Each structure stands twice: as structure tokens, then as C-alpha cells.
Length: 189
View 1 (tube, rainbow, N blue to C red):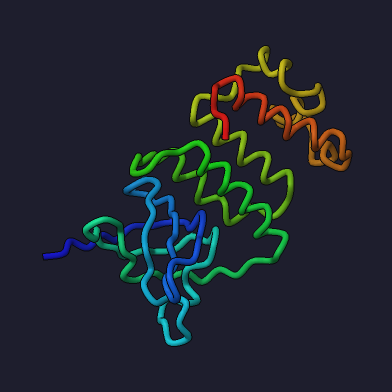
View 2: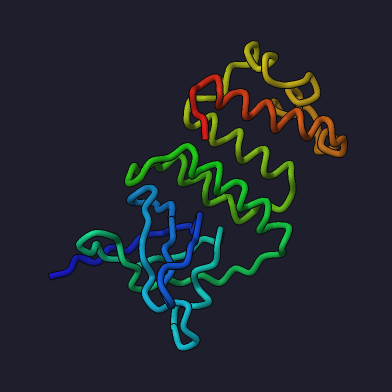
């Protein structure tokens, strides 16, 4: 007898498996990060084909197979621009770096739900900062000087707007600051 589980989810990664299947990695509200097979989804006749969009929230129905989760049904309606997909992919990759399988985290789930609103570089950086904060990796204001420029620290505490990222050097320095925090916490990838 199979047990079926319904949960809200966001697709974080996808790779082809065999001729018609996909192997997807989700972050779910109830189960945390899981990977699952979607059988036959790449076939033209598949009912799930248009619903499993990367980085879009969806309602998921799945069952645990003998070795892997299997997706039974999914529903999503959001469509995104190419730029939004790029920002959201980097955010999803960031979450995948910092999470393990089947470790539910409702605080992180709330942040991941906001992935559908990431449309700019500033949105991406705010998302990453929130993930670092939830994970306990974001240093206090005094320690942030080790990783970020004064303009970046002002952005972090929301005293400035997105003008910071008009400067390519500041963008690169900000990203390096986030990577520095991960290295300092032994979160190498």
C-alpha cells in the first residue's frame, strides 16, 4: 500500500533521467529538501509537463518509492522572464549548497516562497542574506565589516536603496563578501 503526501514545494533543480523522466530537487514545506523522479514528464502527452517550472511555487503530490520519491501530481501557474529565471536559479543553487535532504525548516520555507518575487540583483542579494541569517551564518553588524564594504553594510541594514549595485565593483565585492562568510563557516562548495 502506497502512502501519498501532499505538500507545497518549489523546484530548485532539474536533470534528465532516461529518455522521458526528470529527476527534480524540491524544497518542500513539510519535508524540507527532497529529490524525486517524475516519470514520463518529457513526453508530449504528459499531464505534468507544463506544471513543474523551475523556481515557481507549486502544490505537489508524491509517494515514496523503494529507493526514491516519485511525483504523482503537481500544479503551478507562474511564468517568468529569462532574467528572473537566472536570478532565481542562483538563489536556488545557494539554498542547495546550505541544506541537506529531508530537514524541514519552516523559516527557510517562508523565505523560499519569496523566490517568486526575485526579479533583480538586489532581490537576489536580499534573499541570500535572509538565508544566511536563518542558517545562523550572517555575522553581527560589527563583524560584517570583515566581509562587506561600507556601502554594502548600509544596504544590509536597509539604509540605502538599490543604487549600490549600479557599480560593478560593489556588486562583485558584495558577492565575494557572501562567499567569504560561507568560507569562514566552512561551507565550501
